[in-house]
Image: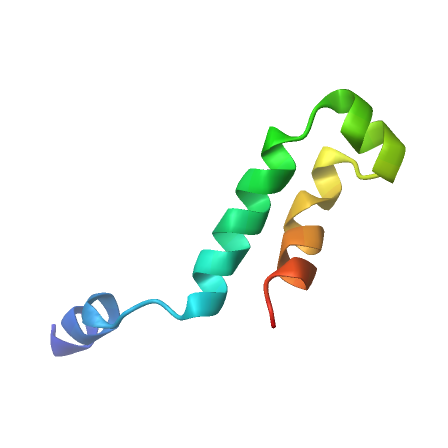
Length: 54
């Protein structure tokens, strides 16, 4: 039981926060913006992972 407590008590790395922010930005784009950049909704996780590291 100590492992689960340790796992959930640790702070999340900053990269995870940047990933969520990038994903939110991609979801907020309009269809016209997506068409201009050529990004499809299926590409969102990959693009957000690429945007998240410094």
